[in-house]
Length: 90
Image (cartoon, rainbow, N blue to C red; front, top):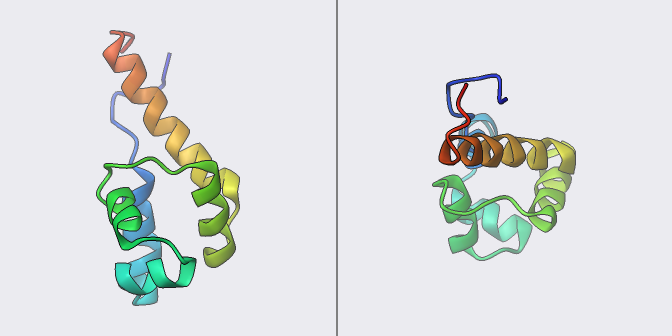
């Protein structure tokens, strides 16, 4: 069972609140730095797109984290939702 009744924070919210805002980076600037379409960055930040392995690598390189950090955030988010959809909420 997933240990929390609270939905884990989507990695996009972490990206925005813990990285982009403190660094003073706009989504446009960040997308340009990563050489990604703005729409892709925006969809991640708004929780409408998952962080893929490729995106995790790009985020990790730019933000001096690890790809595993981003993938673990996404996996926890996805697992929580899957368990709730299956009624496995404990």
